[in-house]
Structure formats: structure tokens, C-alpha cells
Amino acid sequence: MKLISAVVPCYNEEAALPYFYKEICDVTRHPRLSEYEFEFLFINDGSSDETLTLLKDMAVRDDRVRYVSFSRNFGKEAAMLAGLTEARGDYVAILDADLQDPPSLIPEMIEYIEAGDETGKRYDCVATRRVNRVGEPPIRSFFARRFYRIMNRISKTDIVDGARDFRLMSRAFVDALLELKEYNRFSKGLFGWVGFETKWLEYENVERVAGETKWNFFKLLLYSFEGITAFSTVPLALSSVTGILLCLVAFVALIVIVAKTLIWGDPVGGWPSLACIIVFTAGVQLLCVGILGQYLSKTYLEVKNRPVYIIKEKNTESSK
Image (cartoon, rainbow, N blue to C red; front, side, top):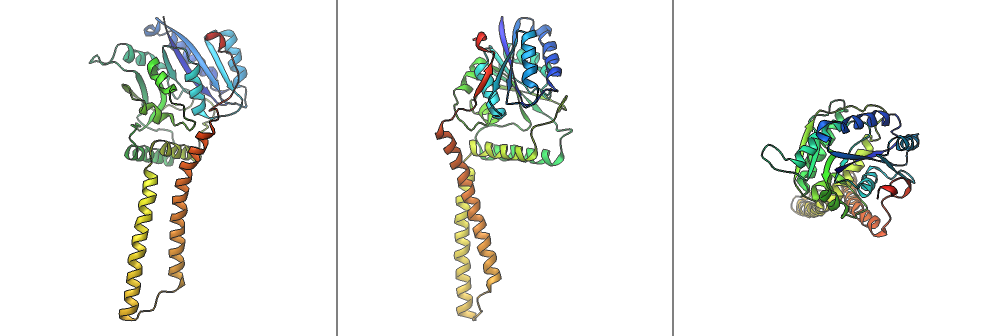
């Protein structure tokens, strides 16, 4: 029997875990999945609540439950990487514990990978995207859409608007992802970068079943910067072009001022205009230096070669 690994990153998901566990267990009894075995691989990302205690209790009651617990909070990207590394399934699914990623889609995902679509085309990955953002703050939805539009314009990696991390992948797809050893990870881009045939499933936005989201606007903004610097060098080109344009503007302005003074005898403008020009150019310079600094900082973190995460304890040894 083929094995499906369900990788579930968890950070303070004490309230949601019982609901998720019940839902995923119900899915395993689906008729389409009768010929598959399951393992539930939970990644405790340094939770400060009773998440780890719940996982240990579940592991005692259900031998399909495996857990990996980090020494501290390393972030969802690290948790997903740990899950992919520890997963031993023929197929690997990544899901959130809050049930915003409906486990009920897994049977359909398996169908697309194993049997293909109506044309017989088979896929290496079946991914999900939200068709709406009902329940999400309007300002957050607006900037999210702008981010996907910008990314697809400045990057060669295909990132679908509304894409979730929730997807089912073949072993070949997972092995390709694990070949990417980079420290600064933006999985939505990595999923597209490795290629392979991907089928997109659309579904309505689902509210969290319990608990609170760990992603506020500021964290999402920083995450978007991570994606831009990871998959595009266009900001560096834009900063260079901006510098060239400002030099041209300054040169033309200098000629105009000299000409007005020599031909018409106009006095040179006072300090307010000069101060505004200095502040403007200084701001542009700092912006360009900041963009350069972002790329330099990513390089700095990569060359230090620190581990993406540190495991404090786990119960996956027996599954290897």
C-alpha cells in the first residue's frame, strides 16, 4: 500500500489540533483512500502553549502520529522544510492545522495524481488556491493581490494569485524541493521554480476553526519582501535606473539654471528649493542603499551556513 504523509506545521495550535485530528482521520476513511496508508507528521514550531503535550498524547493513542519539535520558533518555512525532510510517504501533503486548508480535498488530489484529469493528463503536484478572500481585512486582500501581480511581472517563477501552501506532491516533486538547500526560503516560489506538472484546485476561503492567526499585516509585508528578493533582481535594476534618471534630471536642471542666469539675469533660487532637492535625492539614495542591503543581508545569512531549524525532540526515528 502506498503511504501518504500529511505534514502539519503547528505554532500555538492547541485549540485547533483536536478539530484537525478528527477531520484528517475522517478523510482517511474515504472510499477513494482505502488503498492508502497515512502518517500524520506534526511540526511543533516552538509553541508556547500545550501543542506539544497534545501531540504526544495523540502519538500514544495513534501510531500514525509523528511529531518533530523545534528548540524555538523558526517560522513556518522551516517547519515545512522539516516536514518534507522527515516525511517518508510516496505522496506528501502540506496542510495548516487551523482547517483553512480543507483535508477533504485530499481524495480529489490523489485522483489527479494517480489517474489524471478528464483528458488523462497526470500531475506531479496538486495545489490549491482561494477564489475569494471572504472574512479577510480589505486592506490585507488589496495588498496581497498587488503582491502576486508584482511578483509575476518581475519574476520568472509562476506564483498563482491566492495560492496556498496546501498541496499534495509526488515523491519526485518532494525530492526536487529537498535539493534546494537555501537558508532564506520562500516556498511559494520554490514550488513553482522546480517545475513539474501542477494542477490547481480552487475553493472558497475558509475561516479558522479555532485560535488566532499568527500572520499580521506587518509579518506578511516582510514575507512579501522575502519573496521579491528571493526570486527577482529587478529592484536592483530599478535602483540603478533611478540613479541614472536623477543624474540626467540634475544635469538638465543645472543647464537651465546657468542659462537663465547668463541670458536673462535671473537670480538663482533660494535655499528652500535647494533643501527640498537635497532631501529628495538623499531619500532616493537611502532607498537604493536599502535595496542593496536587503540582497547583501540574504547573502550574509546564506554564507554563514547555519541550519534552517534545530530539532529538540521527535518520535520519527522508528519510522525511518
